[in-house]
Length: 248
Image 1: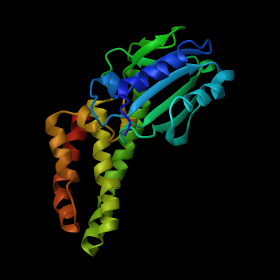
Image 2: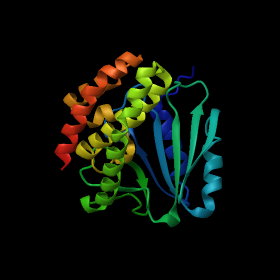
Image 3: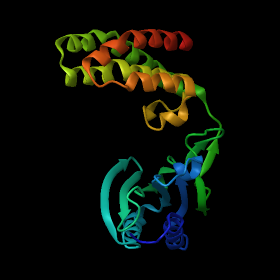
């Protein structure tokens, strides 16, 4: 295994891109920004790049180190995503390499004041690309109504879970338990504790909700048989009703 450090990887990328006129900003997201960094954390690198220079920037990124993984993860409108891993380094140091097109006017470099989940560490910013804005709860209302209806519908289908536990068919029971019991409860937990982050679902939920609901969620998830699932359904019904009442 190579002796290169995580910080040396970040510094190498920053040193390569900072001098380029076509790279307007570079920032880190994820554990580097939120304070949850440990030896298992991946590296979330983000760049804002002139549209015409994107391919050149990607080629440069892929030549700075020998890679044993180079995966095109698609992206979003105005953003390209690659996943890299440097040969011989910690297996957990996956590099999520995100390139924002400068023409999208900072769509993916906008952060909310006071947001403890989505934060960034700016390495350089030549054009005011990274911005902080005030949160606007009104923007979440339509999304909340959709997921509230979705959670109500899904939980109403709990009989599908019962059916497979009674048949003794564990794979099907587990599938429907996740879809019609666990996921609706997670939707409500997100609405209750992280209202602007419903799309996170289970990702980092251990960091995002208080200890008491986290203990309940752990209990809900600890199933390994049809009997375990059946034994959790009464608990799940009661908890779902509690969460739903809190959101009214």
